[in-house]
Image (cartoon, rainbow, N blue to C red; front, top):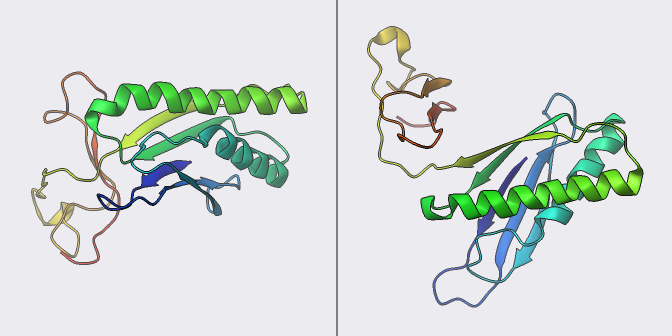
Amino acid sequence: MGADVSHPGLGVMKPSMTSLVFSYDEYATRYAAIPGIQHPGVELIDGLQSMAKEAMTAFGMRNRTTPRRIVFFRDGVSEGEFDNTLKMELGALKAAFDELWSERKLRDPKPTVTFIVVGKRHHVVFFPQDDSTRDRTGNCRAGFVADEGLCHPVTLDFYLQSHAAVKG
């Protein structure tokens, strides 16, 4: 699952748009999205509980089982909001599990959740050490992970070169 909020420009009194994207097949190759709207400028996703319940229902209908593990990618959260976002939105996910399991009288264990806050706007640049670790554009190859040395001393974080750039 992945979630984000898109806000209107400053001074524009239009709602913020929310979205939860999720895979609904066992191989995580088919995706659907659940859009929503909320008050402008609010970063926490108001309707996350119902969105997550809808996503898990779609998964269950397709696979005739419940997910065992959920990796939840959350974009657009500032460092000062990490703790509150984790508390509120992980709570919404767990409330969705409780509601769905209660309504359907499910006996399967509830899924474990790995909650990852995604930060794409950083100023860290990685340079490959030699030609064998370089892609066609000169960048580190897709799949490169840095999880030691320059990472935050307290939080569990890492840098990931997730895909090749279209341009160098």
